[in-house]
Each structure stands twice: as C-alpha cells, then as structure tokens.
Image 1 (cartoon, rainbow, N blue to C red):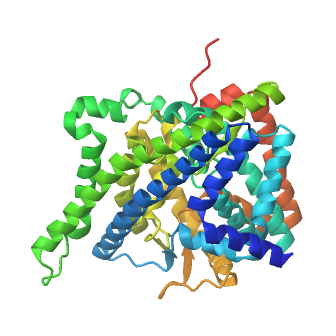
Image 2: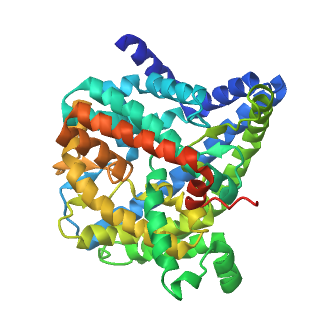
Image 3: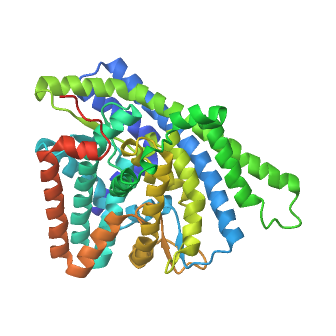
Length: 469
C-alpha cells in the first residue's frame, strides 16, 4: 500500500499543478459533456492562468519576504519559534505517513459527500490537500496513533467542503467567479473573525458609516486611490520601513533608494497583473461551469455543483492585497510587543493575503474593517502558534525536516496560526483520540445540519447578498 501511495504522490509531485490541473479540467469538462475542442482549450487556458498567477505570487512573495526580514533585523526581534513558511509546512505534511494517504482519503470523502448531497463542491485543488494532511499529522503526533491522524485528515477534508459551500455564494458574488468555491483551510477559518469585527463596527456610530472600499478610495483620492498607485505607495512605505533605517555605513545611498523603489514597483505590478491572470483563469473555467450546469440540469434536477479552487484566485482583488500589505508591518509589530509570544515571522508574511481574502465579501471590501479583522486574527494566531509549536516541530522532525539554525521550534502562518489546527490537536491530545475525534465529527455534523436547515441565513452571514423574495 505504501508503495502505491508513494507512486501517486511522486506522480503528482513530478507533474505539478501547472500540468496536472489542465489535465483534470480537460477530463472533468469532457465527463460533464463539453465538446472536445472546448474542453481542451479550457484545460490549457486554466494551466496558463495558474502559471501566470504563480509567477506573480512568486514576485510578491520574494518582495515581502525580503521586507519582513529587513524589518525583523531593524527591530532586532529575538524569538525561538521560527516561521518556516507554508512551502515547508506542505513538505512536512506530505512527508509524514498521513501525507501519503491524504489524496485518496480526501477524494473519497468528497465523492461520498457529493453522493449524499452533503456538499456542492467538487474539490480539484489537490495540491492544497496538504492542509488536511497537516492537521492529520498533528493529531497523529498528539495521540501517537497513525489511524487517528488519518481519520482527522478525513474530517478536515469534510470540514473544508462545508466551509467552501458556506462561503461560495459570497465569493461568487463579490469576486464575480460563478460556479467557484474555496475549500482552502488558510482562508475560510478567518470568517468568524470577520463576522465579529463587522458586528462590532456596526454597533459604533461613525465607524459603521466609514466607507473604505477600493471604489470609494479611488473616488476620494483620485489617482492615488487606483489599485496600481495604491500598491506603489504601500510598497514604497514598506520599503522605507525596511531599508531606510539602521543602514550600514558601507551601504550606498543609491542602493537603498533602489531597494525602496523596487518594492514599490513590484507591488504595483502585482496589483495590476494578478487580477488579469485571474480573468484568464475564469475564461478557462467558464466552459466547465456551463457544462456542469447542463449536466446537473439533465441528470440531477438542476442541482448546483461548485468547482473548488485555491484562494490564490481571490488575492488579486485590491481590497484583499491592500489590507494584507498594511498588515505586514502590523504583524511584525505584534510579534515584538505581544507578551508571551515566542514566534518570529519570516517566510510566511506573503501568505497574509490568503488569510484575509474571504473577509472581503462580508466586509464589502472595506479595507479598514479588513485590517482590523486581520489584526485580530493574527493577534490570536501568535498565541495559537506559540502553543502549537511543539506539535508542529515534532511533525517536522518525524518527516525528516531540518530545523533552521538557532530555531528551537518552528511554525507557519498557514495552519500554524489558525484555529482548526489548535482545535483538532488539543481535543485529541487532552481528551484522547477516540473522544476528541468523536467531538470533531459531531461538531461537523451539527454545523452541516444547521447550515442545511437555513442556507440563506448562513450564506448572508458570510457575505452573500440577500436573495430577492
């Protein structure tokens, strides 16, 4: 069995998302009844779009990682839990025994839930199955039992499908991506924070009337409110904070200026190019979405089906990326001032847009509210990461991951900062595997039942527009 799972993992790792996703989309479109030529073009277009998205995210990642490291150096932050970033967390997740089995487990859970009409999402975002593997690995470490870890990974996969269904209408309406849902466990866990912050803002006179969405900012600020210029300005501010202080005497002034301008231009480019890559992606997905509608109309009385994708398709929105950029120095400041925090951020600062992406529909793109909600989630996240670091580190060591020099323990914003990992690990660690898993399964059943009883109210709570009566 291990040999088969290793072969499956090797196959997906070798070909990667930019090759496998077009093949999956092509085959899915054919199965749903699309004509060969249209299905083939859809697959190729989706692959091209993801290549573009990954290139732009790589540029964004590089710029923010360098800025974050410079800020940490300037502030002389010393901590012993290092942020190793989501790529390392994903490698750790797939390097454990749970990781080998997560693809068939997650696909099996998805198929069963579709057949039982417990979900509308067909999750083709196979590369982000690592989140399920990671939660399962933490449970396996907490209980010292592989079977419990595998069960936890299955529950995590089902939980992601529920979150995708819950937020789908909001995502489709706000981001204009029909037929899409986001079963991504870096983004969806932030919804409770957004709901709480939105409720607080609505109770405060003055603040509740403050409009700070990109369109309003553009109208008020003119050219300085345009996404590209906003990215440039925020990038220049981040560059100044990172490179203009504590400059070594031997470092030329021109080099400092070049570094600052480089950050500004890189982030301006991200603001312009990323939404265009997403538009290309949607061009490729439209034939699949239309074929899915026709297929379900003929064979399942018009039942809806969503295509589950990575939240990377959302982060190019000006509200998501602008609020995330402001949260970078806030995250560094929090790591400095929070009492009891042991985490220092490095590699995962660029994952913050993924954390806040699903805030936007509920908060109507209000950047001020998104920044407050993001600050709240990061604040809680530092304490989650500090408490979870021993389990995170043990999972890394079991997968053969080498710790960075001078790091006692490790974490990442993706999963390490988020409450699902804390909930899964602590329930099974403190109550034992069987009881903890039973509680997790019961909680999942309850929320799916409550959601099914009043879908519209739940979807409106997540930011979907109210349906006209």
